[in-house]
Amino acid sequence: MEKTKKKLDAWQEFRTSPKYYAKRIRMRNNLKNFLLGLFRFIIIVGISYVILAPVIGIITQSFFSRQDSINPMVFTIPINPTLERYEMSLKYMDYLPILGRTLLYVGGVTVLQLLICSMVGYGFARYNFPFKKLLFGFVVVMIVVPLNTIQFPLYVTFRYFGIGSHTVNLLKTPWPTIILTAFGCGLRSGLYIYIFNQFFRGLPKEIEEAALVDGASPWYTYFGIMLPNASPAIITVAVFSIVWQYNDSFFANTFNISDSILITRKLDTLINVIANGEKIYTIREQQLYFNAGVVLVLLPVVIIYLLLQRRFIEGVERSGIVG
Image (tube, rainbow, N blue to C red; front, side, top):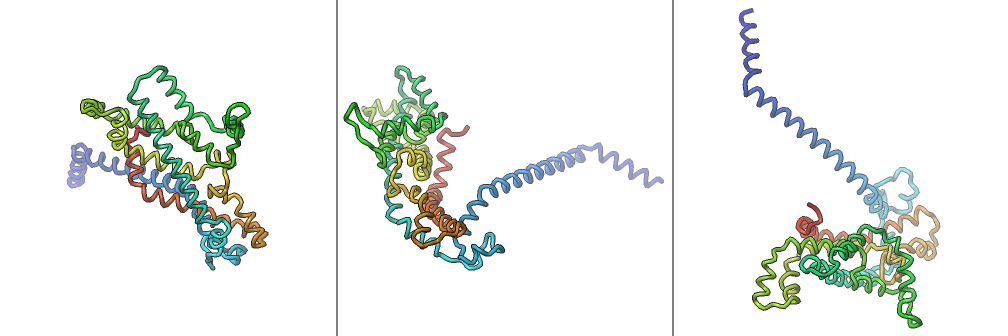
């Protein structure tokens, strides 16, 4: 009994000691961190599955052979993989020539968008002029208003582009997109202007003041000093613009841009072309050719993003999109 009492007294003394409370707090924090980490892991895995599962399915099914497509036991991994789907897709999409024209078109529009949107964003950030706040409000409206609300006016404008009886039909050409971009109204231009405005506002004005003292003109200050310092915002906008222009369906369908210019338009007719050319009428097998075409169309964008991923993330952090 004496020993038991001593043990109980020692336990009670230990429970009231600072060391015991510190240990309990440490265990509680470890349990809390473990549960939060487990919760984050489950959320990330769930979101990744929802996003990646369809993509993985499209990629793996593009290698299915005819036997795999009719085998109910084959779901994700093909038993007899083949490259026939890619060979036919490359042939009927005229892949390399049209991809070259697409990249040229997207690259040209991106460069023009970078130039115009950076100039507009710099003007809003550094100059004071009448109705500045009202005009910047219009920029914000460009971001939030759905493009579908102006689809018909855009179509009519470029179907009868001109003044009076002197009009020309610009549909089925890339000129409507180029004209809109040149006037700062292109695809997502409002967002790009906002990004550049936020970035230039974060740069110290002493840079421009020093350039002014040295006798630099406003144009030289912008092109020679401010624009090179805006490389994070330029990378961010460039990646956004390339991806959205490449995958654009709104302007492409509204202006009926030719499928010889945009490879994504060629993808829309791939199933019908292969079905008629190869006499394939099974919907399941047609879908396999379409999956191969989707992979070929996505491949350039994925490569561009992987090459610019690191600088893109740094640019997002420094360009004022978040925070």
